[in-house]
Length: 383
Image (cartoon, rainbow, N blue to C red; front, side, top):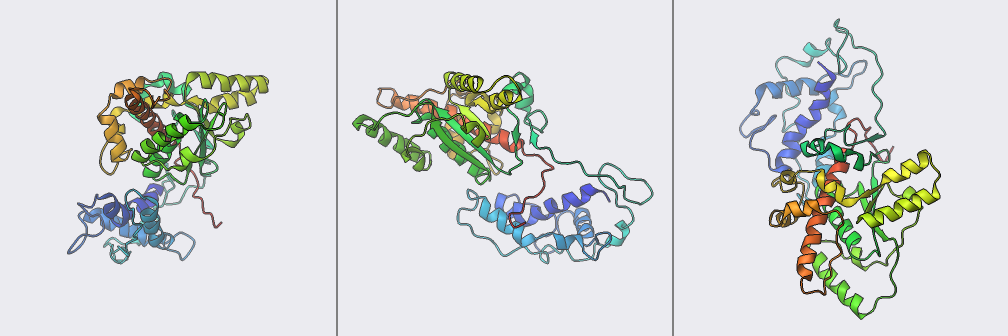
């Protein structure tokens, strides 16, 4: 028995209890099946062995440390797009999965061969050594990123390292006047984060380098058109109705990443950093937090961005917009343009801006999710 066996057990149990019903991948069962045992008898026996294994030095069984009801509730209430009604099924329970039934071999056969992951002493005794502490941050080259990210190695220096030490990230999108692009980007970012189950861990906000004057009749008409377009993308109205905010140099301490919508904005923010901070680690720290949003469009491949089914990165509506548009043109965008909705080709400008922002914000969400350290300790808000 290795540590990997123990780590694998929750995933095996979740396969039948959560993944099958929620992600619609229940064609075959591991632990349970209609009319009898699962479709994989050896794997079922292995899971029952681990479930009934007694923790060394105590009377606790490994199965008693696993809260199946809490896991089922968390999955069905957190993944809103897959379960919009928030209905939590009663089962399957541990009894339904037949976890307490004897496996034939019996857990006692495993009792004297427990090794920590990575090896053992070879004499049936566990090897005493400290666990590797979690990393405070994980860059794209340290994580198991997509093939497209590895292929774009020349862009690696453009992607910042992020710290998940607070178990959430705050992202600031900066426009010139905090009117259209940043708010549209934040709304799409939030929708993609919610779709991937990270809506409570990734928080977007917006501001502008400058704040415009009072709204006149033309700006109100423009706002109405924006609200109509945002509504069609299922973006929350609050992104376009709240007052505009101006960027402050203190925002670099308030947010984990600052996303500039074009190169000129990026240069202006970096000039502020250079003016406020003398050469040294503080200056370098702040400079790497400011990025050009369009850089992230190169992080994910077109195939992943338009993937369908339970592992889709985007909601069907947004991935359809990418598939029906010119993805190569959208990926080549450097400065995301602000659409002029009053011009004759305003609709075409809007579509181009939306496509570029979907590609960039979806890839940004995927990048941040990939950067979550695998060995991050579990966070319990009660403790």
